Length: 343
Image (cartoon, rainbow, N blue to C red; front, side, top):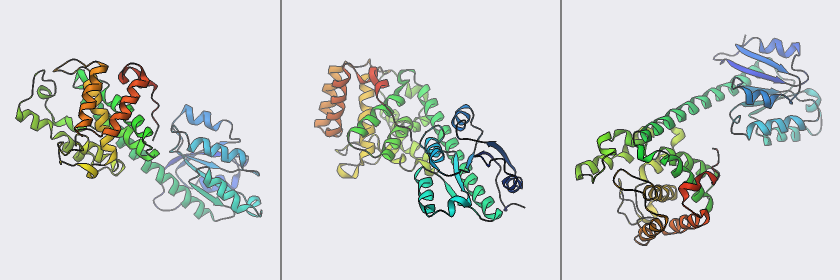
């Protein structure tokens, strides 16, 4: 009988011993659907063709090379990175003087676990159950991210003038982040932060969102609540921890004139500063209900003036204008050329 609380899962058994009766007897005690695969060759094709695999159980002969390469290809590809990969190292490898090297190779390739044989069937089941449980948790986080992204796109879809706005802000933000040396984690936060920065506009009525004229003070007060509303939507989601500051503070200004918290100077973190510049530039360079897009030259003048007043970060504006010069037209026309990393 398997361990208590075992989760169901779909496992691909990879290796020449994938059909071994001993292993089959152990795995059949759990509610797992196990499919054997004799070699690594068809695994990637299978993973790309379907999303029905939760875990790869790699049972390599000696040497490990083709299996560590397979693991690396799976774990460092955004399409398959969340598939759990567990090595089951046979006794022949564990008797080798290089056994520590083999384990190190497996973990360096991104493996989630490395089980050394011989060991008890109970331990094998427990460790595979743990790997599947992590996969289930990751799937739940992915689902939450998809829901939030869909909500952000739905909010944007309410305003015909801003279609494509969040993708452009995301793209510009990532390129700015690259140029100032942001870490991969920060670039991922910028990518998602650009997409969801205006999610709080779900609380802004359509007649205000699409009003062609100047907003009244009361209407502007409603609009200015959207960073706090967005922050509140994301507050329960731990995976959005690094993104929440972007959503809350993308309308803050280095000179302290922004909202909702009136941050200024060093109190205003880098990532919200970056998204603020990207958001500002896209707003002036595209059509809005109350005015047409400004020309590239006029956008330069407006952005330069904002930088001089420290309404935007001057260093980031300088980089943005450099990006504008390199594009040869406007960033909106060339945004597809900017590579956006996958988180």
